[in-house]
Image (cartoon, rainbow, N blue to C red):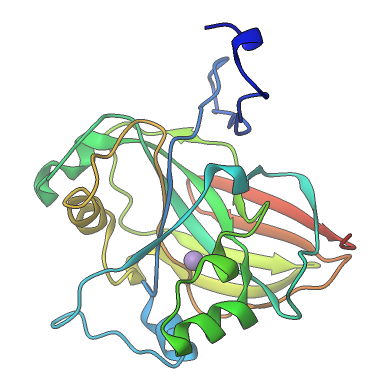
Length: 235
Ligand code: MN
């Protein structure tokens, strides 16, 4: 089928650069873990008891993917646009119903990411029992840095930080993940046939907050990489 057989141009998400690779990574799906650091769950007023709860997820469409270094317009419909700094797991091998002790086999690598959020709309949805899409599936809101290939490697610790205009706003460690990377892959693969190009945003630590036009965000995950974003005035 050629382009002339299509009514309009087929959507293609931006490609993600990969360290040490001339080839880039196409995205498949974007999964996000909710409330995966205790201190963030508490700041959102929803503490997590792992002994009785399971992880939960939301998704962002591939249309939201934005590569680090972008300028992003302040989105419409919000007065409380928040940053959430996260480690992103990049899936490179298909898997379904994967046990935790084999979860590493699916991992291609990692990236630093930002899960940008219309917090006001997310909280209205949460409190009314509505879907989170207007709060989370925001255009240009799934920001990702360069992918670092680490096939089969499970990250268990490492500093995760976010600065806004040079000031540290989030500072934690991957060892504080409530559900670790093995547990997330095992659980998520119970519901989805995970595929190469699937991204898993693993949740944000405490310190989330609002940004306004002009803000420069710089995030970092130790031994992985960085992510940068500038907010510019909205349409
Ligand atoms: Mn998040």
